[in-house]
Image 1 (cartoon, rainbow, N blue to C red):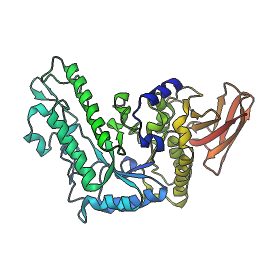
Image 2 (image 1 turned 90 degrees about the horizontal axis):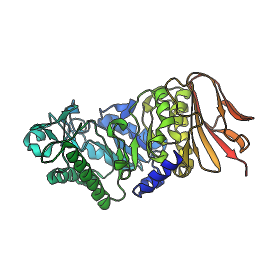
Image 3 (image 1 turned 180 degrees about the vertical axis):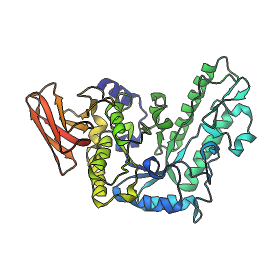
Image 4 (image 1 turned 60 degrees about the horizontal axis):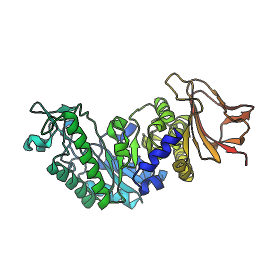
Length: 411
């Protein structure tokens, strides 16, 4: 995994976001869930700024007045959701709080109920047997068509120009299946050509907007490959809504994506300290992707989130350079203890989760190499950890707890 991580870093497009590792607040998961309004967004932006987030992304729903799922595709703001000052007011407010603004797009799809789709010729879409392929309430745009690429580029240019957007979360809630049989020797060849055109489309965007950040959501990690991730700097790893299940993803996902690209939801939905800590530990050795029901969090919970984000900013350079380690192997949903770390050479940062017990024992490959271990997050330790012969012992105060540890090597 260390070798694969280094390889993935070498093939990646150099970009400022993967150097800085910006902290993003997104208003979707366990939060607004695709129902944004001016009234809801403004206090959320205040909370994100208070936490220390550097980008604010308004997720799905901003382009339609009601049920928007099968109406995506025109990407024009809802007048009902943002009656006073329009969506520009939201974007300007995020900028005034010192954050850069992002929007959600599903640029390769057009909803079956989108009025524009009915006006377009079939050669704009993935077709089989003379009919448009429909999946999940959407037609799939065919990027082999230069008019499609121009339309999608015009959307991006307009949103950047009119709203000052500096971040796009690009989703893909569809499955192309085995491709298109329109003007192609084979469906697979058409699908390959679609992706090659898509990659060039992204390359042209980054040529003109080199500081633009684009996240590959890909249906919460369903489409997650280095054809895209060699170009895009951030990957959504899951849309899992349960914090405990999300820990299983957090401890395994760097087998598929570099730690600095792996966007991991930190989305507290209970105002309880251990719940907040568990959420934060999920993200600290990846790219913490903030969200959740922050409007109902008390001062202590907010302080824990602030502390976690501040800590991440201190260690993110080491996350960017370090390699993943799995001292217990890959975790499963049946695992009572999960462990995942970043090895920087001098230090080993280790996330430990105890979902079914209050004590973890982790066998060390080289027990004599470490000089010390201590709890890095939260600052108020509230657990006992020690090196004992050939193993690390972590004693939590309760079941279902998580801590970030730092092990220092002997000089």
